[in-house]
Length: 193
Image 1 (cartoon, helix red, strand yellow):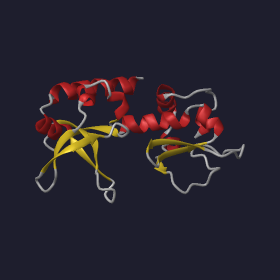
Image 2 (cartoon, rainbow, N blue to C red):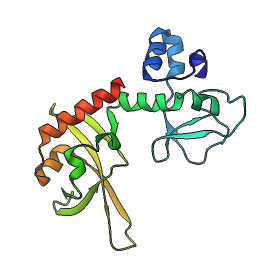
Image 3 (cartoon, one colour):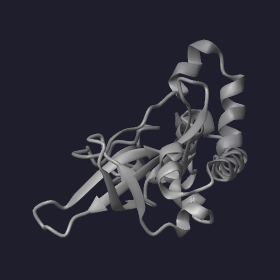
């Protein structure tokens, strides 16, 4: 992979897409590198080149234990981060931290309906996770939001799940249209930047 970016000192999504657009279909497959589970790794492996320097690699995460390994040279060229951004764009994800300046961030806790039908308070939006823009089966737009709940009982440490914005707004008196518009605006800025 690094061979495709050897003429660049620094790679971003614009350069990545320019390179991808000039490759033939036979070679294009070599540019498609999917993220992987990042536990129990061979420390010298680079996902993008042969790591001729044979140095230990860097871990670049999409989320906990999922992402890419890069050698020093690929790390300095920003190749891992570019692939991560490409993964986010391709899958309509936005890191939660880029959505902090919205009305959702002012929600300290949220109310959710469990699958049993019972309502529970004290759930928290997981601002370290990722939001995903989706089109539901009925062709409506929605956002999948990671949430978690911490328990006082130390035997039960944490419960995590995803909730749709439509449900979150219905149970927490939030303006779904405004939040969805803000999210799409941030997602578009992320895709262009």
